[in-house]
Amino acid sequence: MFVPGSKLADNSPSRLAVPPRRPVPPRRIGFRAAPHLLQVRLFKSAADAFWGPTKNVLSGLHGRTWLAPLVKLCPLLVFCTPVVAIVVGAWENHPAVLLAGFAAYVAPYATLWPSRRLFRFHLLKALFFPW
Image 1 (cartoon, helix red, strand yellow):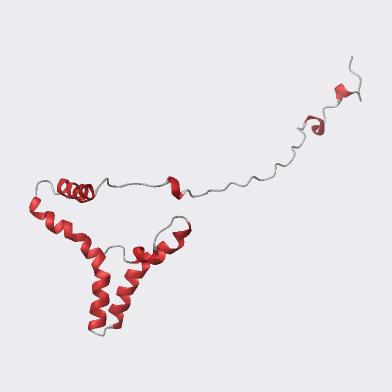
Image 2 (tube, rainbow, N blue to C red):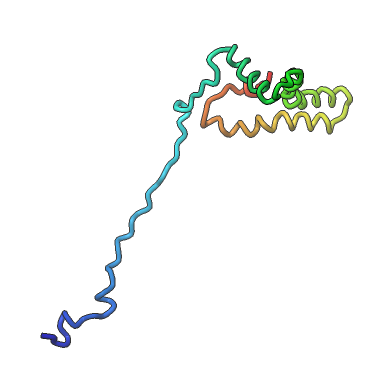
């Protein structure tokens, strides 16, 4: 039997609403680097270090092996250009060339500097990396 004012008759929105949940405190999520887990050995020996890139160069030349010595010298353009600019700028007394050479040599080193807390490296070896 339906009686007005009883619990069965209370269909108000406050009665039908879901009670609010307790707020959940935010959880901290941290990302940590594990340099001791990221050890990669690229080559087994010095011979593998030489023949690995050589095979890659030869496969990219598609039979034109006469280009191999020139292609193997291309990294010298990248690594030697700042040093040549420093020497030529000092020799010719041209400060803009000297500054450009120093900037091109120091910029990669400066970008490596903040990562020293993530992985260990020797500072002088990193400074003279291509040599």
